[in-house]
Structure formats: structure tokens, C-alpha cells
Image (tube, rainbow, N blue to C red):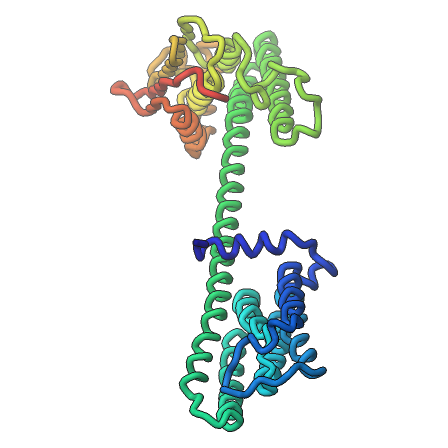
Length: 423
């Protein structure tokens, strides 16, 4: 037995069996059904075997009968395009059929037209129902007078029967609207998710480099009296900018593979378009942070597995985000990075001491990156997008993530990332 929920799907399949004609003005499914009813109504064996309303005696086919059949069948071809026109013509043909006593097989077209109007009519739906109901009253009187019998109950029953196909069409319309709304929401959710992913990639790729450049440029302001150190600071800014450009290019290639550098060009130069960071990338990141004036202790234990899936990339992003935050909010504070490669997971721990706890916090104590309170005051609090994005990445892989203050006022980020997950 066919479920009512499958009716719209079966109807769409019926329409797909016949090519659409005249650029959508003719609906193939309705056209096929109309031609089928038209042909069936002309079969002599089916004459006077259609709907019989009002008790009128049957009449043999004549030229007017062909007109009645045509009115009830052929307008179905435009039921989807002009449902109100179709319903009006089919109703006129049905009235002619019944008042003349042909009782043709084509009377089924009225039910089809009602389903189509209930499904596809967008404007004047309520007015259409009221007009058709009002027109049914004089028709009932005519049947009563011509039939010569008591047909009131039959007429009322038939009116209720006509309400059924209209209700089916209205249900199909509501179901179609709900499906369209569901697809719209899915599209919106997909768009939001894609925008969030792009924003996360931009944050991961750009923020660290730009933060390092700002710190190094700020430090250069205080080194005019030391040309050697000034040249060192400006060189670090230049190198960091070049890495930022490279990573941005890889990110753009990831977003638009058909534009820019060919696939595989410059692999390993940046992390924006690479699936997994190359070996030694963490050490390069730590060295870059050190050149920005952040004292970083780096420890890496174990041997990375041959296949870690996305775990390596997530671990890299975590360290990148933690070091960026350290540069922003605790510049000059001692930071430790510990990465341990296990058989089934990668453990990452990044801790930063509380600001102002080390002797290197003064402007003249440590290299070009240690710029003192004035430069540190220029950094604004982050939006939280970075850590939130890292947490989501770890959660997707089924890992554990935590980030929060320590007892001594510092900050600690920890994660256990299962390795071997598909990228």
C-alpha cells in the first residue's frame, strides 16, 4: 500500500517520465494524465461509465460530448502553470457532461484539477473556494429540477467528496513548502558553517603572523640607537610578513582551487592549504615566536605516527593559537610548549606565566621583542574565536580540550588529540 507521504514523490516521478514541453507552460505529468483520460473517454466500452450526478438519464455520444470530454481533459496540461484557468475549464466541461447526461470517463479530470489547484494555486485560494461553492448551489438546483427525484443527499455528499482532492492538493502544497523551508534552513546552516570555517582558517593563518609583526614593529621603535638590533627586528618583520603572504596564498588556493598557484606548488611552505603541517613546522613556529620577543621552552617527545589524520594539523593550530594569545596578552612572559606523540594520541600542553613575573619584562632587558608595558597596552582582548575553533576541532576528533587560568595567575592550554582519524 502506498503511503500518503510518497504521493508527491510518485507524482514527481510521473512528471519526469515525459519531457517538459514549451519551456514549462505544459506540465508533462498532467498532460500525460489528460491525454490518457481523453483517450479512455472515447472508448465505446467506457461510455456512460463515468461520474453520474443528479439522476439524469444517460445520453448517447454526439459532437457536444466530444467538447465536454475535451474541456475536462486537455486543460489539465496547464494545471501547474495556470491552475485556476484549468479548474474553471474542467469544471465547465464537467457541468456540461452531467447536465447533458453523457457521464463520461473524463469526469475524473475534475478531481485531478482540484488536486492541482489545491497544490499550485498561490493567489485567491479562499476566493476560489467561495466562488466554486456558490456556483455549486444553482447547479444543485438544476440537477434537482432536471432529475425529477430527491437528489439533495447525493448532491451534498458529492460536494464533500470534491473537498477531498482539494484537501489532498493543499496537503501537497504544505508539504512542498515545508520541504522548501527545510532546504532553505539547511542551505543557511551550511553557509554559516562554511563562513565559520573560513573565518577560523583566516584566524589561524593570519592572526599569529600579524601579531608577531605588530610586536616586532613596536619593538623597533625603541631600537633606533642600536642599528644592529633594529636591522634584526625589521628583518624579522619582513620574514614574518612573507610567511603570512605564503599562508594566505595557500588559504586562497584551498578556498578556490582553480585560481592562483597550481595544486602542489609550494607544498609545505604554509599551513593554510596543507592537510598536515610538514615535519619541523612546530619548531619553526616556536622560533618565530621567540624572534618576536616571547621566551618559549619547547619540548617534543616521541615519534609522530605515519598516519595521524588531522591530529597533527589540530595540534599545530592549538600551539599556534596559544602562542598568539601569549604574544597578545602576556608578551614577554615565559611560555612552555610540550608535545608528546603517543601510539594513539597527541598530547599538547602550552603554559604561560602571569604577565610581569619575569625580569625580562622591561624594555631594555631582552632583545627586540621585549618592549615593556607601553607596547603591551596596545593589544586588545581577543574575541575568543581562536580557542573556540581549536576546541571544536579537538571535539570533532573525539579528543579532550581544556583552557583556563592557573593558580599563579598564568594560563594553561591542554589537549589530548586522538591520532589516526581521517583527515
